[in-house]
Every structure is written in structure tokens, then in C-alpha cells.
Amino acid sequence: MVDAAQRSTMKVVMFPWLAHGHITPYLELAKKLAQRNFQIFFCSSPINLNSIKHKLSDHPNTCKYSIELVELHLPSLHDLPPQYHTMKGLPPHLFPTLIKALDMARPEFVNLLQALKPDLLIYDMLPLWAPDAGSSLNIPSVCFITGGAATVSFMFHEIKNRDGDYPFPEICPEHLKLKFAQMRKSTTSSSDGQEGGMKLVQLYEKSSNIILIKSFRDLEGKYMDYLSVIFGKKIVPVGPLVPEPIVDQEGMEIINWLDKKEKSSTVFVSFGSECYLSKEDRKEMAYGLELSKVNFIWVIRFPEGEKMKLEDALPNGFLERVRQKGKIVEDWAPQVKILNHPSIGGFVSHCGWGSLMESLNFGVPIITMAMKVDQPWNARLAEVSGIALEIKRDSNNGKIERENVAKVINEVVVEKTGEDIRRKAKDMSENIKRKTEEEMNEVVRELLQLCEI
Image (tube, rainbow, N blue to C red):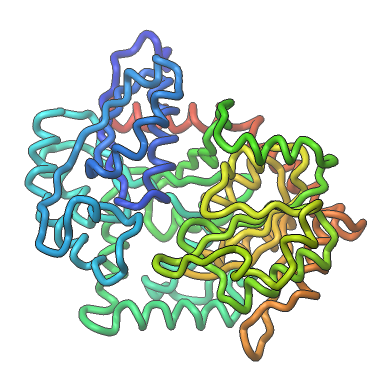
């Protein structure tokens, strides 16, 4: 293959869905490609692009100057002003309106493609028309899936009604099969139902020869192979795409606090930006952390309009009792920096795919507490891979219990019974770091071959 410095620059338009959980991995992939002589045009709404500008300014010039942010202006509908041209902070009832606005922006997106004349379009699960926009101008397009192969392969096995059972029953016990059936019913019963899932199948099948996925073969090789069978495309992993921890002053109070703790002695507790504990679960988590006697950092967030003082949100006297061992952080913490810190020995997580990848990248074993969407399958994958344990909910009332919280945290972080989990997490991290370059070189080869450059 021609060396990256010798070949002509390949121009790529990247068009992620309007959610930060999609924009972030697309931006990380853009950086990786930009470092390999690709010219990237990163397309999203102005409000989303404004939120990522600083992430580019923190990187080397060679990367920064070959990524151009391209604004796609959605129409300002009556109940969807520009600040809602993103999934972040979008009231749930406005989701259909956002989809409508994005559909109305299709002609402008086609105009952008005509003006930029890219060699390739990399598109997401939404909008559904993205690959058609590319093909209308004879631009090859490749889908980039930001979720995991195990979850996606199970879901599309079900959606396509493939003959026989899903070949990896360990990922989909009966309660998860039932959960997915209920999810499909609740999201599709109102209109064209099954067709909605099939539209997604068609979206993936329109990908030119390959599909990129944010994962790695050591964790999901067999699921990628099955996904390849489902879609009839080669599945090419791009790795976990975890941002490099940036050395700056952001969150330094937390890092300084961690510096005083012993190696692998502290558990990090965080449930992402879109998941919240109920009042009962928050109380049980607090008592569970206290019972565990393990050091902890706990990020607490409240849903929009439900913010309250920490003293009122937590058990009486809790903050005072745990002030030596625990640190409570409101709303946000530098997750990548924290997981990369040697004092962290476990991660109590909702198992969003991004959080799972970050934890594995840094060799941190996971204590799973899945809540919604793909998280139960991600958590199941982590557990059957030997890198996680689950905080199980009561089978009758669906709530967590403090004694179980403490027991699982101690097993993963402290006790001898958790040695295998800790070792496997470290081994996986070492494999990721060893194979990252190799995987990205394969991505580059596939993209160049696709566009015959």
C-alpha cells in the first residue's frame, strides 16, 4: 500500500447522528483518519459543532488543520429553536420534531456534498436517507456503527426473523429476549411497526462493501462475524476510540484527591449523561458504598427540573460519615482522566457502550448496573467475557439492595475471588493498546480500496 505521506489526500464527509454519544466516537475516528492523511469534513448542526471545537484545539496541528467543521442548518420550526438541534437536553416529546427538521435539511446536505466533492461519506444510523444522498451523487458511503457487535447482531437477528435461535444464547437469556420484544412493540406499535426495524436493516445494507464498528475483535470477534453474515458486509473494527486523557486543569481537584489513595483502591460510580437513579436506588447505592468501606468517587446527576441539594438527595449524615473515603461530584467529572488513574480499581457503570470501551481501554473491571436501551446486552457481554460482575436487582420489585451493592463492589475491587476479573480486564487493556495501530491500518486499507485511491 502507498505510504500515507505519498498518496493523494482522501476527502471524507463524516455525518453522525445528532447525539453526543455518536458525535464523540465519530470525532475520535476523524482524528485517527486525519493523522493518516485524510481530509475530514465533519458535518453536524451548529450547536453540536460549537460543543466540540475545543476538542480539536487541544490536538496537534496536523490533525486540527485536516478536520473542517461543516455546519448543516436545520430549519427552525416553531417548537424546535436552534438550541434543540441536538439530542443533548432535548425534551423527549420533541424527538419526532427533530427527525422532521433533519429530514427537511436533506436538500442542504446534498448541496454540501456537491460543493465538497468528497471521495467517501461515512454515515450513522440516522438520518435514514444519508446513504441515498451519497449514492445520488455517485459517492460511495460506509456506515459506522457506534454500538457493540453483540447487541447489534442480536437485535438484527430478531428484526430480520432469521431462521433458528440466535447462536450466542449467553448474551440473550430469556428475560432479555422478552425485554427486546417489549422494546420493539413500544416503539413500533403505532404505525408501520416492523418496517421501522427493516428500514434500519436497509440502511446498513446500503453501506458500500464494509461496515465500520466501534469495537475490537478480542472482545467481539464472533459477534462481528455473525453480523457480517446478517448484513452481507465485511465488519471492520476501528477499536474502542477512547480519547487520550488531556493534561490540563479540568477536574484537577478530583485527580489530586485520587493521588492520595492507594493503587486500585477506589471505585468510580457514574451512570452517564442520560441515566438517573431513582430516589430509592440512590439511597441504596449510598448505603452500599458506605457498607463496602471502599474509597469512591460518585457522580450524581438529576433529571431536568428535579435538581436538589446533595444533603437532601442522600441519607441523613451520609456526607459527613464518608468524607474521608468518598467524594461526591455533581453533574460532571472527567471520566477518561479518572478511569486512567492508577487508584481506580472498579467502575460502577450503566454500561453505555462508550463507558464500557473506556473502562476496558484502561483495564478497569466493571460493576454493571444497566438501565435502558442497549445497556443490558452490553452488561451481559462484559460479564460473560469475564471482566464484570452485575449488581442484580430484586426479582420482585426491580430495586437494588445495599448489601448486594457492597458485596459486588468488594468482590471486584478487593477480594481474592475477584482476581480473575481484575486480571482479565488488565489483559484486555494491554491487547487493545498492542493492536490499536494494526486495526486502524486495516481501516485505512479498506477505505482506500473502496475508493481506489
